[in-house]
Length: 635
Image (cartoon, rainbow, N blue to C red; front, side, top):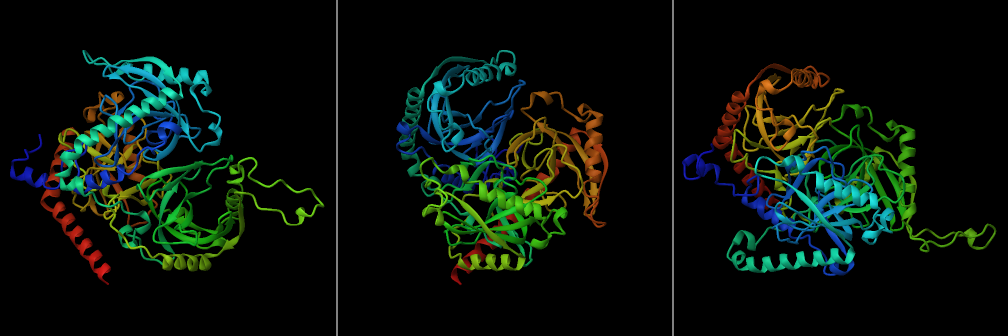
């Protein structure tokens, strides 16, 4: 087991960490997460309007039960559903509410397009499903996305189709059936369905219960400095190139991703809370032709940062950072005035190396992009808000009026003009950084109290994807570090173990043999079962092989012998080939497999190295960064 907090090693280990639900974290991170989470709450009129913010934990169609941990600001894998069913809607909760079971009130959102795990969506309550389980009463509010026109007619529970209600009821009656073990019985009983008024009453009760609990805790919190004075929420807009580790290059900058390529959900970063928030669902049957976001530390005439459309081979994860190369820009105008979109490609993807200027972009792709922006707002005009189309030959036909919402593409800019636009918006940016308090949520997470038997792993490349991320050391945001050069995908969820230090100065990595892909950036409790011995151009580079501890389908995976031979061949083939096209200086070779005991030994070795050297290095880097920021402010 881990050393006790009273021992010398234990005191060093616990110097920077405190207890949290599953992953222990640095005190400043808990403050940051608290400051961020506490800024989201139901509006005062929510108990009348029924419109509330919902933090999404599990997207529709998923079987990984994720839970939001407000101590760390991360999504953590609670369990994988034991039955062959999936969530029939987006599942989450209303923040700043409290039920009798000690948790916020749950919400099932009937969305048309699955929402992203971790986002905040403004939802409209339409009913409630009253149920109970082995722990007691457990009502589920039923809602729709408020600004989704396809759900505008759904106002009460009778507007929800009978089959949809039957499907929801069947899911909750079924999803715990296989979780019972011995005397620990799990069950769910559906009591009744309630209308909108009953849902509003449930909401009101949960808001009042939360307010009562908070007032009782204020006396305790008043004497706790770390809670009494939480840090301000930082701004993605303020991220500097130094913070984002942007590589040098005239045409290279870092973009913050808000919308994934192929998505119809328009997310926007909310500077007041630090969350990605669902702005709207596209009203037309079109999807983003590229990954969409903005360039930090830029300012346009509309008061927002410079928008960017990224041409990528594989969709990028919302909420992550990516180094991009500017190749052009799109000139537009809409109901608010002039608008430009920077056109870029992913720097780390060799498939776009030949695209250096606008002339290198295929003509059809440019036409597709222009068509998207000219049509994506067409159906957002409320009937009656647009002036009637004038009759041909009439006086009005000579000067037609603009629609209430519209977008027109007026032309393209080449690389040189686009770079001039970028520099202009950078100069216009006048805000000074106030600290990135919101974002260090993935820094200094604890490895876990049951190491090496169970360890926390941060997912940096979900299964069946080809993009690897890393935690940016100064912001805590995920940043793309590599797009695989070969036609291969990660055979499992790939991540790293916090509070470990390998020979290369980085956290040791883990391949998670999951059944269902885990989302980027989530924290999962993993059971190490083997060690994959490897070497590359930098020396030994072994990988821990593990399985999600709460995945019942892998409950028999306890050691190397339990891994099927074909899975081992598949994993070995991936690591033997995934660097083949990166150049002669980059290579990797699998040298063998070892059992669980070897994996435990590797984790313990790298954990001791971290507390001997790694933590001191982190402290020194943090002090240097703080001093540099102070000097900049003085200048």
